[in-house]
Image 1 (cartoon, one colour):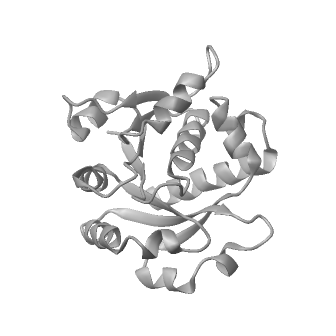
Image 2 (image 1 turned 30 degrees about the horizontal axis):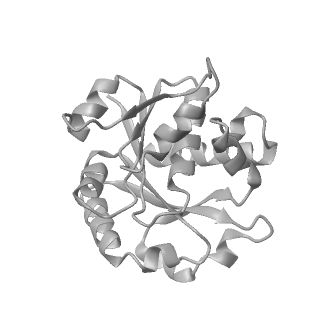
Length: 207
């Protein structure tokens, strides 16, 4: 049975796809059969996949076809790990993603405004957590010169979920994705360590 990790935040531009692609790449590099499942109508994961070089050694990439439910799509992958890039909007699919995930990672930028503007999503997330979903907030696009705790509002902790260090604001992330790769492909060793640390933290939450 697959371990299912979802990168989810209905607010666009928070680094959701960056998180999903890099986490999938890290799982693949860890020797686990990995599928990166694009459920976002914007198709950002598919756009990244189209840019990958010939014979690129990366995770399998699939999109959610109209004739398949999410649960069926996950089951048909046959993978050890399925990473879901959730829709960049709050709709019924968001609930389905959370219902089928073992772990939900919610990327948030330093201001925390990505959360406070989506109270309805937080209600949906909390409901699924109460039903047994593991979840965590993940720092995204944070300034490398400042600690995460200094940048994110202390009220974040009041939601009762842990906060992972996540990914900093580095040119290497955007550059590698634009070339159909990830920072694990030699773009930035420090960024690569961030990705591996996040992957390790995610595995710990799944234990």
